[in-house]
Length: 203
Image 1 (tube, one colour):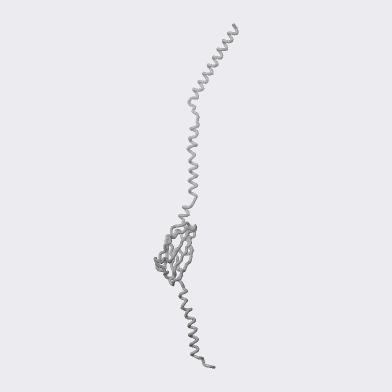
Image 2 (image 1 turned 90 degrees about the vertical axis):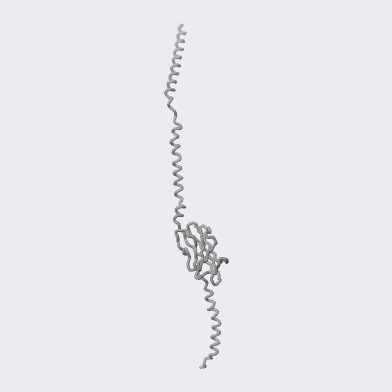
């Protein structure tokens, strides 16, 4: 058996090392920063709309106030944009203030630049179920008050209507007496005229 050539073995090892080192060196560069947590948390339900949304990365992003490389957009279930367009960076956490929206699913779209200079982005959602909004949006109270107004308004008219059309009977006895007197006078005149006619016929 021929002895192995040490020189040839070292040459092969050097060639293999030359090919493998770049691959190992590139591995850390490919591991971009990752999203570790959010507030509110992903896929959770909160009972009040938050005043802000924040995302924490594994490393501080490559961002400054002058560059403004980070973007966070928050919309409610109706599609209304709630974020004000301003993103604050504090260490590995980026955040934005939002206004209150309708109950339902809130969608968060975010984008920033990883500490290694590569852009990273993502999205997630959470749900807002504010009991105060549900009570305020209930339509049961308005029709009830309207119905009460509708039924109570005609009541005074119904009470005053008989007073307006009720006939005045205070002079009824006087009217009857006058009518009777007129009839009596007419009857007396009739009998007197007839009596005179009969006397004239007898003469």
